[in-house]
Length: 364
Ligand SMILES: *Cc1c(COP(=O)(O)O)cnc(C)c1O
Image (cartoon, rainbow, N blue to C red):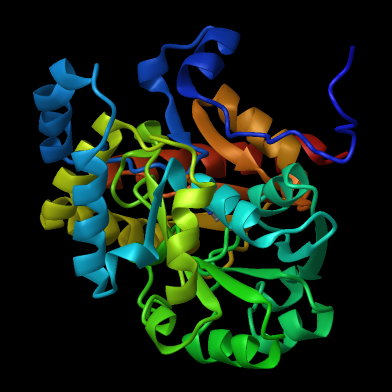
């Protein structure tokens, strides 16, 4: 007996982990600088760690009040009704909830290419189709309404990523409005703000109060440093609030995840420091790396290095783990997450050595 035909479903390719690479290469994990998954190099907020300890002996209970409290706190933060906040296991969980709530079999989503793989994966799991709009290295992956609307063909969901992964480009709010205005009444425009904290561009969350066709994704995985706990959320239009109870996986956002997220929201200093370091590091990488880079509003920088697979491989030999963007359809680009100040400087040194050695080696 076999599972259903999954040949249309491409497997998700995650960035490689420290232990994995250290084991493969016989290196000490402490010598490795991991800049491949856009994680927070400062770690989680100490307040979040404390909350995890504090609630550890209560994990025999299902998460109930922690989930309610987190939803309420997020609603207050964004000044929206609690019904419009869908807490989920990571923002990825919210993408699934939106697929479940929106897609009839055969309905399509429109997603960016290159782009975050999970939009299309989730649509396919839910028997949906995927069409794409292209962002181009030729104009630094510039995002505007025209690019999206030219490719638009009445899809049920249109995904916008701002800041965009893997390029770091942003979609200004006026362009989001223009897209929502021009698309059909039955099209939901989803703005993925997984890296929203790092940018100076305004959040699209207030649009969810103004209109009924925009939703916004947010996560605790990036600026808040809680990727391992899997907590994210979606702010949905008013009329969608009620669907949550019908589509969410019961108790999927865990007790410790919700508790840690609650504590992390109160630790404004940790987020501010994380954002400040990322802004400094993305400038440093752009200035000091010996390769062309794309201006980034996120906690990562996309660089054009020639043979990305080879460069990522050789960088790993030197103890720096970066993301080869071949799986994004960018075989000449690598994505470098921002590290601590020290880690970023060290990584750029080692990457420049890598690039220089490869160039010398390539000469006849
Ligand atoms: C990291 C990321 C997410 C969400 O990650 P979760 O860990 O599931 O919250 C969503 N969208 C983009 C573009 C991302 O890079």
